[in-house]
Length: 240
Length: 240
DNA sequence: ACAATAGTGTCTTTTAGACAGTATTAA
DNA sequence: TTAATACTGTCTAAAAGACACTATTGT
Image (tube, rainbow over all chains, first blue to last red; front, side, top):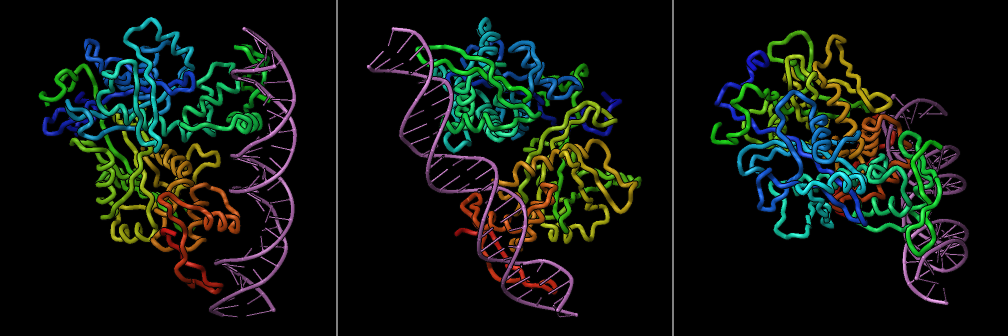
């Protein structure tokens, strides 16, 4: 270590250094509900407290790559698009000491997430209920004792804010969906992220008229039946 | 240090740790031009290379507070609103080794900035010219040898992206202005940040009709003459 | 009068939104 | 037939934009 930055106080005990970590909020929308992947706060903690998947940074590596590796470790392989949400550095945020986290966000199709998570008891997909004012979130679960430790509520709330900013003008909504999807599924992604309901007719018109980044537009590819009602058109995102 | 996080590898030379720093982009708009405050990359460097003001993080402190202290140190006292732009962690970004920077942005009235910076030879206010595609920026100066070291171009480019996202729906434009301003000054802030020109008539209508966060609206408070032409109305942001 | 910046008015196009109504399926 | 979801059409209001025009100053 002494060959790098010799003047920086790594070896000088006068200067504390924070514990550096990367946390990932793997989010999905299922049945119109926003959800996030959480895990027990340590391998042997059985007190029911859940945290976002995270890891300490212990090698020279871009944090985005660390986040991608975390997703591969907890969910599975894939070209996951991670987005940086921000840095959380308040000294009191971890009772054990000064900890600095860089938070990332990944949007995932619920079927993909469920398939990966199905066999892993440690993975919990927790419902996220953003506050009406958009500042915080509540996490619910089958067991009320299951709560997030640390300030991971704040990280998720910031992630929701980030998603709301990026819903229009990015491909984010489509990362919550499979390659093919119905208009209702796309609508429910928007509603879950925004936390408000949208007029179906106007939403459809807007989406069909819109050009997405990369010159992509909604294309229809057939019909799908799933219930005692008119079949829905199946869409995908493609070049016009 | 051993009382905190005993299991984290501070004392373990197997694990490298990055040099942690906070950098601040103090930005302003003058004569329709976006500018940023830069300083020589070290106190004794006389090679003309400039960097964003920054400091290593060496005590348990929220990074936003570190950024505010930096602004006070380089510019002067004031309740500066710092906004986090992001973390820059690519291993190759600093040739001396692994360095992780958290970047912040401050928008400042050019008169305030100039007044503070006037007596300080080390402070340079450098023009920022965003690329048309919005991905990068060019920095100009009276002396072409004056260039940013490290990846501070990227930090500034991210800062511009951040400002463009927040121009509508926040009070950011007004932080580039004094308490009182003319419609032209407000227009030029928007044009400089967006990098495009706007129709004056439509801009005026839009601004006068708009309600800004906190229920604030543009109020007029008199006229100002500054040239051989019709005097301009002076506006401020207040409750209706 | 002229140049220069400030400000108004009008017309068109685009977009968002409310909301009524039609379509197709299973039971 | 009914219930349920899918989809279309129409009208209105709001916003954005183009652009011609008027206003007020110093020289």
